[in-house]
Structures are given as structure tokens and as C-alpha cells.
Amino acid sequence: MSKRQFLIIGLGTFGINLARYLSEKNAEVTAIDRDEQRTQEASSFLQNVITGDATDEKMLRSIGLSDIDVAVVSLSKNLESSILITLLLRELGAKKIIVKSINQMHARIATRVGADRVIYPEVEMAKKLAESLVSPNILEEIELSPDYNLVEIVVPKKFWNKTLRQANIRGVYNLNVIAIKRKVPILNDAGESDIKEEINIAPLAEDEFAEGDIIVVIGKEPDIEKLNTD
Amino acid sequence: MKKENRSQEVTEDQELVEMGKFYFVNGKYDEAVEEFKKALKVNPGSPEIFYNLGLVYESRNKPEEAIKMYKKALAIDPKYKLAKQHYEKLIGL
Image (cartoon, rainbow over all chains, first blue to last red; front, side, top):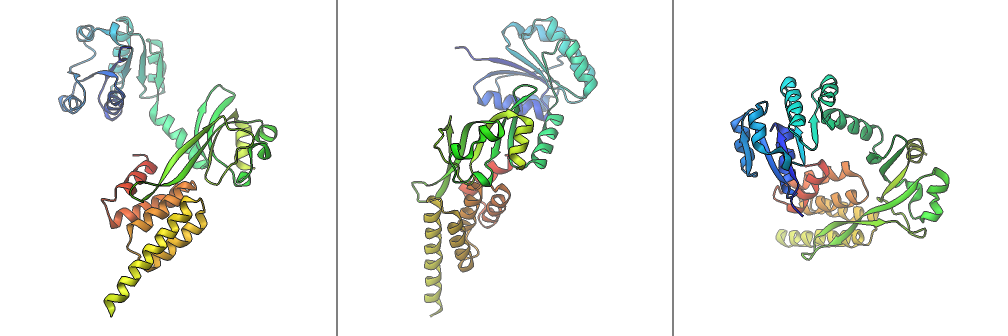
């Protein structure tokens, strides 16, 4: 299977970190920025780095967008350039365009001119942080649909040393436990203590919860909230 | 005479740490914490004891307490690899 190819336009903090993580995952990444200092930094871990203006149509054409699977526009300040680049990418046949939004107006315009997905990392992170501050037991939350969420939650004290059957989470809360994550104490070869994380996928009715377990549940938000606050 | 006392203290704190580790790997977290705290009274400057306390708190999903312990371990020994790994993971680095 050939490597997936990504184009990242804008090497600010977000863009350069995205490029780094993608390359660590063996993806093929091309990056563009006007700032030579940034492109030099990216050259330390990327092969294809271009110093130039991505609003220049000729330059974008020269990249060969038909080979790119996903183009990410991650300009942090210049709204006009971001919109223009999004439009050009769409016209030049980019398969999928993701735009890092600068503000809500930008998000709306980017969608109109061809972005397949608009992300707003600061708002998304703020929302996650707010949720984790209000409900510290909820470690991760993924919205599966407007009604259903998948949530990682610290197992409530009342379920410690109880089996799934005894806890009856499905019957009482209408939630499905799909996994139990546990940090298991170990001694390494040097005799030092450490922790190994184990995951029990699709736990059985007789499996027992322990203090410190994290359960992964699927269900409706009010039911999850009830489990968390009961 | 003084030297002899000191060597006895070192042995005692090591014994307490080993006892704490034994409880920890057997899932007896309260007992483990008790032993590590006793060990700290004998040797308050041991990064290993703070690291082990951090592990117990981390296992029980008490990340804030764990972070405090790892920070103390690293303040004493900034090159403590395991403490650094756990600390960085918990603070999201």
C-alpha cells in the first residue's frame, strides 16, 4: 500500500506539529510556508519543504495536487490568504481540504469556497478543558451522533469489587460498557516498579471492576451524566 | 558509632520500600502508601520513594497527586528516567 500524502500550508505551531506527527506516522508530507526560518525548521524532519507563497497558483500547480490525499490549510492570522488558498486548492482538484479556522466568519467562508472540513482547535480544546474541569471523572468524550457519545470514565467507587452483572450498568443507566482499562502494577527486569496499561475489550458479565479502572461506555449524554453524578 | 546508625537507617528505608513495592504489585494500594510514607520518614530525600508513591496514585487514577510525587522525585533527581516518563505523560507532553 502506498503512503498517504499530505500537504500542509502554513508552518505555525499547529502546522509544524501536525507535519511532525504525520511524518512520525510514516505519512508523506509536503509543507509550504513563506517564512524561511520555519521551513528550515521543518526541513530537519521533512523532505519536501517549500519556501513560497501558496496563494501563487503556479506554485500550487507545480506540487501536483492530484497525488495529495489531504491538504491542510493552517494559516494562523492571514484570513484572506487562507480563503484564497482554499479556493485554489478546490479549483486545482485537491481531494480533501481541511482548514484551520481563524474565527467563525472564516469557518463559514472556508466551507463556502470548498473546505471539506473546518477545524477550530482553540474552541475545541477549550470545550474539552471545560468538560474535564466540570466532570473530572470523564477523561475522554467522543460524539458518535447527536444523541450518542462514547466516553472514558473513572469507575465510580460504588462499583469497586463488583462484577458487571452486579453493577448492572446497562439495566440501571442504559449504558453499554465496551471496555475496561486498568493500570496494572508490575516490576521490570531491573526490579523497579512500574505500571502497564491493560485493556479488556468486550468484558464479560463476571469480570470485576477495581479501584482505578477506567470504563469505556456508549450511551446517551443524560445517562452518562447520571452515572457520573449518582 | 554514628556511621553504624546511618547504615542501619539506609537498610530500614530500603526494606520499607521493598515492602511497599510488594504491596503495590499485589494491588494493596493503601498498605503500599503506608510503607512508602514510613520510608520517607527515614529517608525524606529519596526520589525512588516519591516515584513509587506517584505510581500508586497514578494506578488509582489520582493524577494530581501522582504529578506532585513525580515532581518531587524529579526535583531531587532530574535524570530519573521513569519518573520523567510518567510525569510527562500525565501533564500531556
